[in-house]
Image (cartoon, rainbow, N blue to C red; front, side):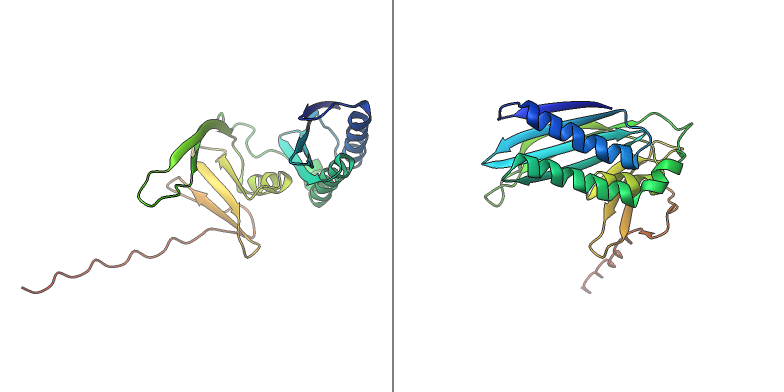
Length: 208
């Protein structure tokens, strides 16, 4: 497994590099048949040590991100988070067969980040804009990928079209899917589609 480690705002040490590689190798050997590469970012921000670890296993990404007052502890916590997710999906990852073998290419999606305006009536300030690729997945694959990344939502496309969809984690513990296409069929048990609110009737004109 190739491990790329980046140090930010701190000195790079062989001790930290070896610790991260050993912890990752132990987790990968236990739960994954194939890991192509891993990216680790270790940074110091406001006296807190941040460890951001990303693994690539087949078509899926696995992420663990933690912070503490000690970098070794942050690495261990991030690896523990990855291990919990891999343990949850161990059998499904090993037996998984992609639902989009003959799917279309990923769709490029643009997103923008706005600053909250401190004064009412003023337009929000555009801070940053970027693009990413929404990959073709089934709803079941999208939910699994979202969990493996420890995210609250995931943007993806349908395997047989270029329709963009969003799966998200609900407060009640279930999952919701927002679909941009004309037709939508849930493909995973337990995924609930949010029902749009009813459109209120138009007020009647007052009699003259």
